[in-house]
Image 1 (cartoon, helix red, strand yellow):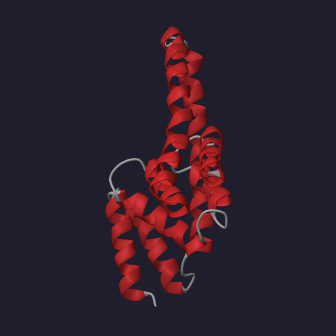
Image 2 (cartoon, one colour):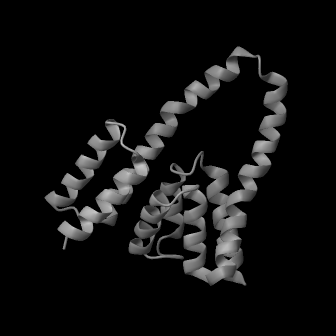
Length: 171
């Protein structure tokens, strides 16, 4: 029971303190690795959640919750993940509906973009530098993935191809 409460509170905390699914990966890494899952399990969870359709954050929560506490753990982690954004979005929508014509609202959203981008890059760097091969071939797969993303390749395809390259090329 303590493990389920700990899972719920961890995902509640992560989803209250982070701004988006991908940006929350770094925070979740610090909270979950060594406590609920191993480093390898976390990297696998991030990879699977990126390849599968749907919300990365929800899939990551269910994977970690299931690894830590089976089906009840997955459900508790899911509840901890969706509760904060649901409540916050309902409140924000009510406020923004009243303020939607104000110019500062658009500027506020534009100001969030660089901060979110930096958070995503930081999380990606932490995972890449700690989670997998750091051989020249591993770096090459990462670099080619980056180039593919700049060329507007579908993210899920890039992750899938990089995973297959890892299976075939990295030992």
